[in-house]
Image: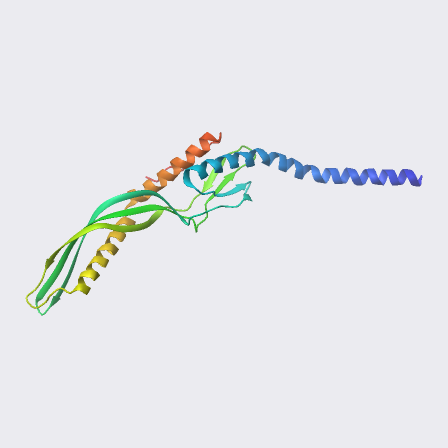
Length: 210
């Protein structure tokens, strides 16, 4: 009787442990196709954009991000901009009319979250993307038309101030260019969509607001 009770106890213990493992093992098996798909997509993104986003399966992070750069510029556009600097003193006006050519870069700041998420049930693909923004504006060339008063002359320091004001004004203009921002998003969407498609996944970028 004692031997039978021991055997029954051991069998019951083994059965309970097996049942406890089954849900976890089943969940792991279900997640494997999602993880494999994620790896293929991330490899495609890495080839195109030289970084790897964080990967989540069923809202659980399974692969950490690898970001060799903190910013990704997806579009560069040249534009013209002008600015007038002037100062009056005792009725005498000095003025600088500055016209410049600039290059603006727009893209994404990786200090914000950028991740790939896959649902293991239907293998649907989603991305968490930061909002695009202007990353930088630089002067390519500029020219200045000077006007001086009889006793109100331009100084070298004022010329430098005017150029700095021109650059600041150009940055403000670029930041307000919604077309530049939208193009930066479209360029990234195109690269991600290509990586997803070649990996056998399906992803539909969000439509732009009208």
